[in-house]
Length: 146
Image (tube, rainbow, N blue to C red; front, top):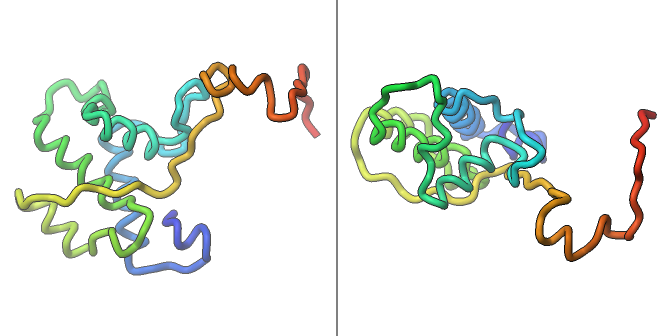
């Protein structure tokens, strides 16, 4: 779901581009956007890919069941997927530009920060150990359903 629809309830001409970007990144990684690991600093696929992209390790997200693949083409698809999920609608390409990007080897712009990057508050992180067990220095040892 695009950020403009999720936050403002309005569907833009770039909402489909956002959704296509999520789909593209899910296909490459073999993971769903909503799957996450509590020990990971990112709580969703977009955040994980964005972090790996910034570290120059984007191919690390590729589904391990894809044994042989052209690294250059997959890297380009990850780059394009990140262009599709940018937070601002004005930064996302149109669907006609999407078709062009996927079909040609034209140079790509650098992606800006994607929407919905969720970060976990890992209790084992350095920041948490400085701050203590909680913001109020109160801990709850037993979780109960309401």
